[in-house]
Image (cartoon, rainbow, N blue to C red; front, side, top):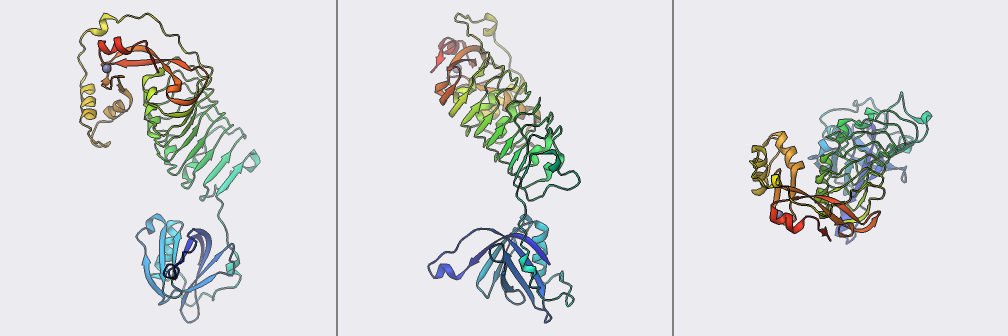
Length: 405
Ligand SMILES: [Zn+2]
């Protein structure tokens, strides 16, 4: 049996000799064979060492660490030489190796397999991890995308649909579909659990699905040059986001939840239709922001409090529940609270500049924000209007119409 997986060979004698060997996973070719004397051998070859290393398996395994075999990890501790082989690969392969070394199943067809062939070890196939498709002719139609891909670029080939086959590339970390004609993204794009970068610039996407991505691993999201009218409030769930590019869309406003992106450092929203920024914006800490080319409203300099705003409003049950959940810092899961309340909690809470929480019961007011307060460098207008929610008339007098700087 031959298969490819990543292997880290740990020499247990090195630490006792005061040395430490290299510790890294290397793509290797593993061959398990049984010789005429029914002795199972494991042969390990890498691209550098094609001759490979042979380990006797029968009566030579000191210990098997198989706790994480369901995650594709397996460690074999050999007596002679004193090596630990830390294997990482497809689950089915790890299970197969485990079954063989345990002697539970004879995958080797006892007695029928020939001894290790000398040419077997020369075939170290390093699985493809990067793929770039820049012409229509290279697009795989009848074949599959390699499951081992960590980086995939499909750009400039007028792709009209998001290929659902991509959703099965579980190892994918970088996906670049820029410069195509994609209009709709699938809901299940969040299945790409290892995704770190998603490049979708220069497409025709109008709406982001509400379950877009909720992985904290994603650090870079580029959806510039599309047709987006809004950004869903669930963007806050991409909590590891550091770079967010939304330039050249038709976005009218940003969700207040954007302030929950605590790791965000670069935000570009140039050439959109944004008139005001949400109040929560002032809690961001950015290195760079680009707001160039937006039709920001001019803030009225004289404004009086509408008497209707001062009349006592009866809070809704939903607002009371939401407030209590936040006030008592209740930890909840999707099983504890109704979905509508969870969405409401994510979207509707704003904080008055005095620090008090407003849910549905604040006074709306216009203010201005000096963007240098939230970002080290600013492209475009420096002072822009901001929608504020103030908890009571006293705060209105105190904060409304003042530049927060
Ligand atoms: Zn207040």
